[in-house]
Length: 70
Image 1 (cartoon, rainbow, N blue to C red):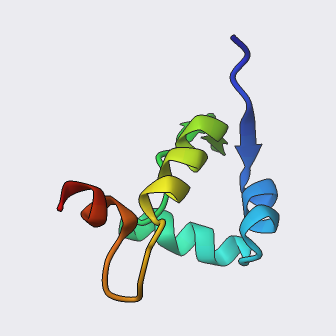
Image 2: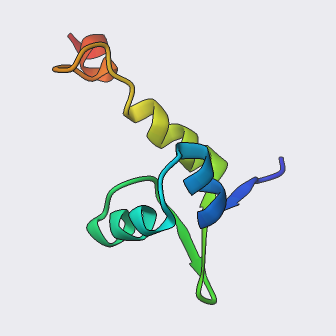
């Protein structure tokens, strides 16, 4: 199985946010897990998709995962 990686620029484009936003989120512990190898930041596609799934909502008050548990 091939592991697909995104760099910061790729993820910023995917989510239509600035690279600075991703840098801030990393320092605050927000967003998907990431790798830091020799100064390069990489995100695995599986971690990006898992984070996106965890952010799904069914209303402005409830995450989709809360509805499944209820």
